[in-house]
Image (cartoon, rainbow, N blue to C red):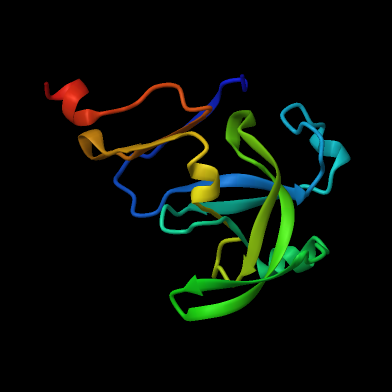
Length: 156
């Protein structure tokens, strides 16, 4: 069984975009949970969490800056239409030791962010957003531990 890892981000107001800092490194086939980040080419970037994206993406400028080698091409459906993109393999280091090794990501123009966390990552754990008292709280944990059902667990 995978070790429990989680993080929570609290905001003092309602937010319209879920963001975290994220470490990105070239893919390595080792366990990165306890990885010495001084030994890898790690970039810390702003990441947006997007439940509408099937796969995670990095910006083309980050891929170039990290000298990542394309593993091939794919087609991505974006707001601008269907575009051909490069595929890269990276390690993704999220807050509090929530890490993923050897993740295939697409290279895209992401505007002012360098990482988009998609459903390929989100679906591996429990993802929660609450807005109680006008303050957004965003939490993520791996592995999934319980089924959350607001209808039967909280209203019944």
